Length: 140
Image 1: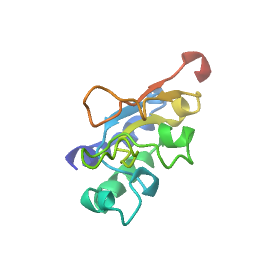
Image 2: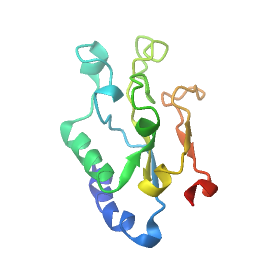
Image 3: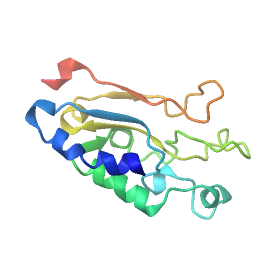
Image 4: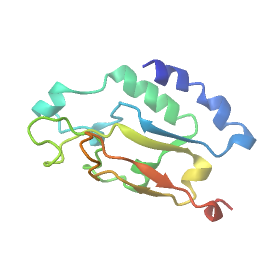
């Protein structure tokens, strides 16, 4: 919560003309919306979820000039998860949460980035790595 509250100041950075290229990425530990969480009513959804205040803070950050690159590139994918709880084979059944994000300034998001990793196994981690490639020649 402290990180999300501090990140609200990001507007000052995004709105500066010289700072138009900004990427904020990592494990933000918040599922934005229904498509980033297990189906309502399932035990997985009941046992672990983000608080409304956390989701509201993340939405305010994104609303200050950032784009959720994963959702922008794959808006209808209800299985775009990056974290799976370690019980009941949730990863194998792809019942998870999208907690890891690549958020980018609008200029970068329009540059046709490539996003990868949202279902890749990475050793024994319960998170999938998420990364984006932004090609400089698309920024013109």
